Length: 344
Image 1: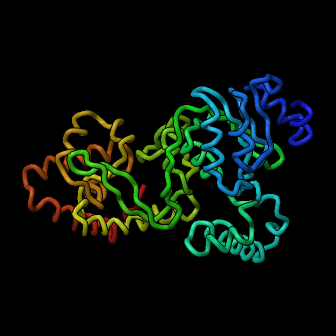
Image 2: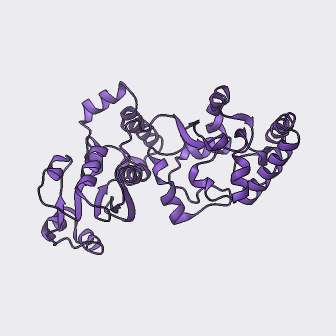
Image 3: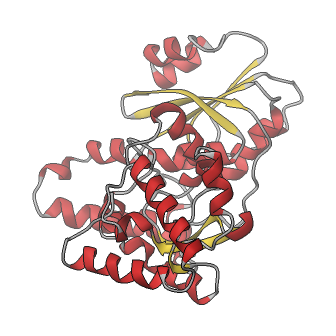
């Protein structure tokens, strides 16, 4: 195994892996394969699996990861390899050529990242590439691993390839309808704690929803109440969020009767657990809204300010149920247009 890993990846990678596993142990399986059959059909039981093949070359990424999951027990380790989009981009010499680099990377993005996620175009992409050399961001690679039941334990990059040490903690989600497109539905808590699908323009990489606990664990919350240093965000996603453009599709939820124009923002179950108990119970009594109270009150977007604004709004809503939303709506529009209020 030592010679195999060193020949394939180099001595630094071998030393890195041995910080976490014994690569020479009989219970460690080291393979270089893009198909799951070479792993699941092996009759020997292992507590460590190392796949030196890049995830970028898996025709069915999740199927391979699900097969590896089935071969391991909870607590066992799996080490994956991936070439991230950032590392791939740095390898290209054309990145140093003005104008041409924008054209090249723009066309590459459309073919390598958009085509595989659109019906019809997906067939063209896989016919041309056979599913090899796929473009994966760090967030998508981590998210796919998390969705398939693995916890991210550690990672390190060597010569443009990232090696990810993971631990099996549960069964895969077997998500057959993972969201790839520009419009998707977020699971959020509605009135009475009912989970609703809130429409939004994509601002994060695919499978980012499986990484919320991981991002919070390593970075915690920012003052805005959102995860700090969130690498799941795309560059264009930051722009969309800044001007609330990503939330325009929530008008569909308003039409469906799941949201109001004004109200406490719809939040995830994970974030719900972190807010004060009294506000948890207070929130459940009302339908959430598109425009949050802190915008109407022209407050800061940090956690304390947002929660205090919600308390004030809900108390006023209790006293004046028919006029509060109208009042907050016009105040919010005024703050956005004339005071240039922007999202945190």
